[in-house]
Amino acid sequence: MFDQLSSSVNAILHRYPSDRITDRGAASSVKSRLRAPITSTERAAAELVARARPAPYRAYDQIPMRTDDLARQAKLIAPLLAGRRVAFVGDMDGTASLLGLLAVADGPVPAGLLVLDFDDRVLETAQSLAERHGFAHLLIARRYNCFDPVPPDLLGCSDWFYVNPPYC
Image (tube, rainbow, N blue to C red):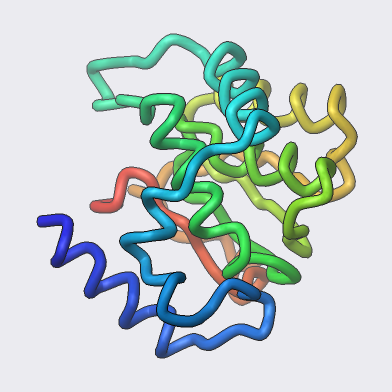
């Protein structure tokens, strides 16, 4: 399964090359980046997000990532999302918040983080973290349920989207 994931992510990286990814080359395969050590800053930011996020609603299949997995995921995608407007459709994990925290810690900076979720607690947590930690200028939190049509004002407003869960 890991090889299949690695192949898929490598295909994406080659399809959407980015000069923002500075660690390209043989040593920067997806496999090596997924195994890259988590820095103390990345771990502290991920732990802050994990402590802040609300208790999951199991009835809605809200199952947040483990803290180290969240840190690695953010580390993997941050260079791809630098300078881009990203819509997060469902963000129980707090990925948008972690990317905002890493951005203010001199990591890659997205142009914007739009958090869309049906759970007001998730939206309030993201907004609160953004205000308390200096990335409120990057983050917008808005109620949206993926079973509803996309509001017209959201069409075309993002360069990329991050879906969680992936079967949205």
